[in-house]
Length: 291
Image 1: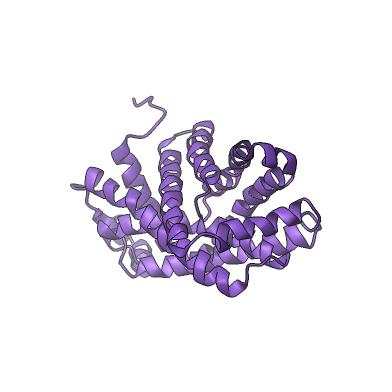
Image 2 (image 1 turned 90 degrees about the vertical axis):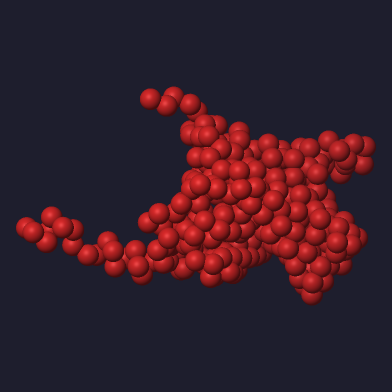
């Protein structure tokens, strides 16, 4: 009897592929609304980060590194809620869907379909949270929070070059996918929380760029009349961080396929299209035919 508290790396890789198959077989309307809720959950962590960082102007002036560490420490609560509730976050799907497609567990067309649906679901949830639960409820409209959010947009999306945001996006999703990997590998809740927490803490404290987290903070800065425009946000931050996040996810997923899934076959999951699965499950079994 296996009493280990964690899965072996090869078992984690298989579990991630199977997770992609489940997500692929989920109806698109459910996928979209799961993604909306994921955008909201991640924004809870983002707001907590802004409250800590923006509410400490004196500490920021004297010791900005400590503020980054404190803000990064509270942010992972959002990803923990997403993982434990089984919601759809784009950045984790950037890793698991290519893994599943490479092993033939899902068709290749499933990758862009899922990514597009989840992208817009995450965006809707993040924008809802920014407008309703951060601006119109009055939490972030007064100083020091409003000034901090406007200044944050400058340092996050205006000052850096496109290539810098792109490179930060790689580092971000490399760590996010490691967190997801470790969370899947843990067998009980407390271990999952700890396994997820530390990589996310590192990426936020270091200032890497997460395309979905930015869907909350940067549009909020635009709503609060920062120097960042919607056009500049899309052209510079959103596209650069998205491409970087894709590559960061592949940096975790592709080695996992090479290391652990070389001899693994998808088996019955090769016919992963939902319609085929439904036809198979609706057919009577041999015992039912002879009854």
